[in-house]
Length: 182
Image (cartoon, rainbow, N blue to C red; front, side, top):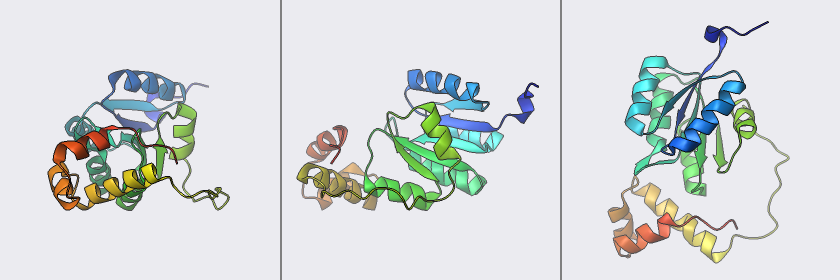
């Protein structure tokens, strides 16, 4: 028995990395999703309004824009949309905001198609998640603090830098670095 094209659930994939989108699109299509791809927030919003996808995988940082805006838009269009926030720049502040805005899961890159599909279909929390025995390192705490202040200033780097009493370019350099794991 073959699945008709119309029987496939629609999934919106928004990430500024075109190669990543191409590879993930192919992998998700093999898992029976109809995948719509956008490489910027504006195109993602246009696709979302036109298609009203059932699922979405949204990158946190899309060029110089925030994928959080797209999460908010998708939920305003249909609060049943299952959204996974995907990022290479994970922080506690952005994870909390993504969930508050309506994402059901938050994954760090690299994440494979199976992990993404599992996250899209996981609607309940997991009480068996292990709690770390070690506190966060000073570098990780600094990263988390910078992310928190940036979120408090709606992603405005200049405003966050002023609040941190730091030069804007210094803050930008610190934010461009990948966070340390622990």
